[in-house]
Each structure stands twice: as C-alpha cells, then as structure tokens.
Image (cartoon, rainbow, N blue to C red; front, top):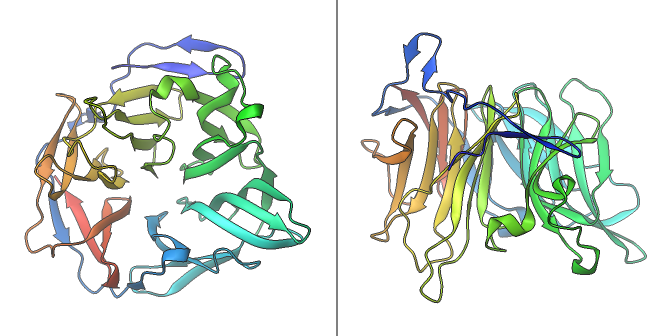
Length: 333
C-alpha cells in the first residue's frame, strides 16, 4: 500500500508517487545482493540482558552500559573494537535511567530514549540527543509519549516509534500531531508525526519491531501478534527527508509466534534487509525487492547459524551471537 504524504503539525499533504530507490542516478539497483565477510574485524560482545541487544549504526558498533542505573551510557566501537565514542545520558537527579532504544547517526550523533526515576519516586519519559561534535547534550521530556524504538537520520534528526503511556491522557487518534512515529530535530523539537495509534490495527506494533537509517531514508519494521485466526499485522515503512512515506508488506513470517522479527538494516545502495522467523520456523534474512514489492531470501555462504542482524551502516551489515565475535558483511550487487 502506498502512503505518500507529508504530515505537518496540522495537515497532511498528498505527494506524487516517488521512485523510491529503484535507481541510483542512472544505475539500476540489481537484485540478488551478495554478502561478503569483512576480514580483520575484532569486535566481541557479551550479552547482558539488562543492557539490551547491541546495535550497528552510524559506522559504529554500539553497546549500552549501566542500564537501569544512575549512570547509563552508550559506547561506540569501530570494526576493530577500538572505542571511538562514549556518551553518558545526563538526566539530573535521576536515581535510575532506563534505556529502551539507542542509536547513532553518521555525523556521530547518539540518541537514546526511555524513562527515568528521581530519588523521590517520580518517573518521566525522555529523549536524549548527544551530538558527536562536542555540543551540549539535549534531554527532552516526552510525557506522555514513551519512546520504544529510534534511529538517527543522516541529517542528525531523530525518528522514534512509541506510544502514549497513560491511557487517560491519550490524545485523539485522529490528531496527526500524536502519531506512533515522531520526528524530532537536533534540539528535540517535534517536527513531524505519522501513523496515529489506532491506524496500526495492533497495539503490539509499537513494541515489536526495529528502526534503521541510511544516507537518505529511515525505515521501520513492525509486527503484531497473529491470534484467533487472524493473520499477523505489520509492515515495513520508509520515511524520506522529503516527507514521502512508503509502506511494504512484511517478509513471510511464521504466524503463531510473537517473536517473528529479529532485525533490520538499511544500506546506502538502497538495500533493505530484514531478519525474521520464516513460515517454516527458520531464522532467515530477506532483502526487499522494491519493483515487485516482495522479499527475496539472502543466504551468505559460511555464515554461522544463530546470528542476529544488529543493523547496517554504509554498505555493511553487522550480525552478532549472544556471546562472542560480531560478524560484519559487505553488501555488493
């Protein structure tokens, strides 16, 4: 389904249908991408449940440290495991800082979203934006909207997925300012809002999914829960800096499992990769075929079983096990 519209703070303007990544200049994007293991990479990761899964974004492998403590921080490592960035999340007087989502942009901007609790027991939702150029960090209170997923676009703005936490404060679903997807500028100001909560059709879609970014777009893949004979709801959705929105169906997934989505990565050659539990119950990586609006299986030779797609940057994907070395793959067409 095509949803090409620009949402402003009070109106939605229909746009003409864009040619989304079918061509780069005059060179067509070829199907059947090849993934080749990048040699001499030495990043290792030990999974700590409290610190959530890692992420590969903004040309760095990201690890969360100190989650659910007063000193939560994000580490950024290059492909050789060298520390290239470290940012604490500065929330004054916080007894506890819980991070639900974090990512990095190609300009070095780090962003995190979640909630905090003060020493007197008050809680609040936040979005933290930490520029990579040494400028002051920005902390924005987002109540009653709680950030659950986020990605930093190439221009340093932050795209988020979340929901309204307190139902008695729930904004009208018809109000375009109060969408599930919200777009914030460098200062944390809300500059766009998409997909009112009721339009998702499944309350789990703001929780089960992933976001990613490339040089010219942001993607969000989400899924609900198939039950009572209903098919699974969900979609892959892209947002461009020009304001276009394009929606594609999910890859083929097993219907009766809530944990059908395992990862998402966008690449600068317009590639979109998603890892799902397929209809046969196998963990499988797919690549989006834009022309047919369908997904094609990708099976890298020699890739060990049990790896999870942690994201993409440039034309490189990262896959990680629960414990051990992270695998990086270069994408070629």
